[in-house]
Length: 223
Image 1 (cartoon, rainbow, N blue to C red):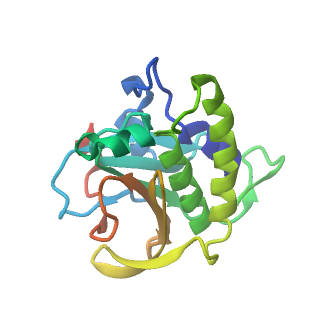
Image 2 (tube, one colour):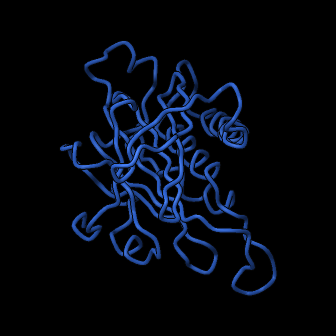
């Protein structure tokens, strides 16, 4: 899970930090998923947009993300904090298929199981991919991102630790417990549904406390 996720969690960026629109996948990958996709529920009336899907080595879709609100670019959090009105407001919902440890398609190894921690890690790395540390040279960002990615994994692997609190939010109308944490970069949360998927989310400029999640009725409508 970790190797596959790292390849899709960081959206490519163009010169100057703008996200490359072509980096987002078409709806085709989402349609191949053998599980339901989740997004914010109908209480959210703003823009919605597809991001990317993550697959195993043999092409099976394991996870993907749907964005809501402003399409984020890589931003310096100090610059954003200096002008709150210019701060992007977005929430990204990550859906991860719940899978046990299993054999790879060629039978040569085992694929890691997915869990709530998987959703928490993908959400944490997703938030980092749209963050530019203040006072940091462009050439050092990759090193910083790698270090922070490892930290995100450590945090995701300890959801009962002091860095996380518990937040109850509706999923398909049913109150559901989520693990939640905030940082200077934004917020991250993760939980499970009753339909065989884990849901993670991250955002900035939008409060997590008023969010609700629901299965997407027609993912093709996002095309």
